Image (cartoon, rainbow, N blue to C red; front, side, top):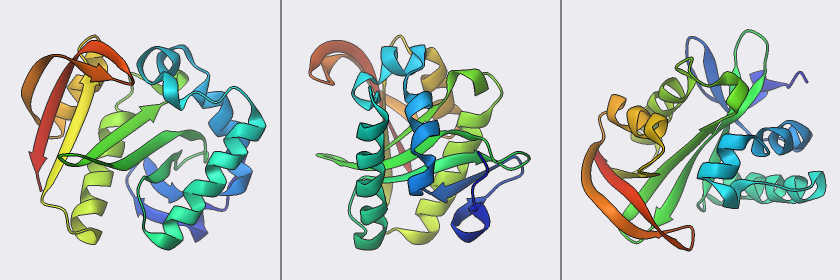
Length: 176
């Protein structure tokens, strides 16, 4: 699907742009959420129906107007406007956590690292936050590499609650 990304670009990189979600993105978001990696690593972000996805996107769009978290932006490939995933900023007890997901068919191409790099630049220039946190399952080696590549430092490795279950995780931090 082709989106009107020229109207809602948050930040543009060489290969990808971070853009505000629009209602017409629901189908792609729904499909991206169903991939195997999303089910394995962030099962609470899997949308079983198109209608559920459309409702979540409406909430995301409202958050742009209010500035409330979570702030979530679509990752769009510049050359063909493919909706590849998202980046997000979520308030946690310690401060603010970044999250990201790139649909499985686009993984292992550096898109997640580029998306997080762009997102950090956007946050640094637009939101008054001094520290960012990143949390990943210990078994999600790709996500850990993305965090480390973007300058996050691991400060915890062990068992903790992760999406309601006791699991082995890493916690990382980055000063911005």
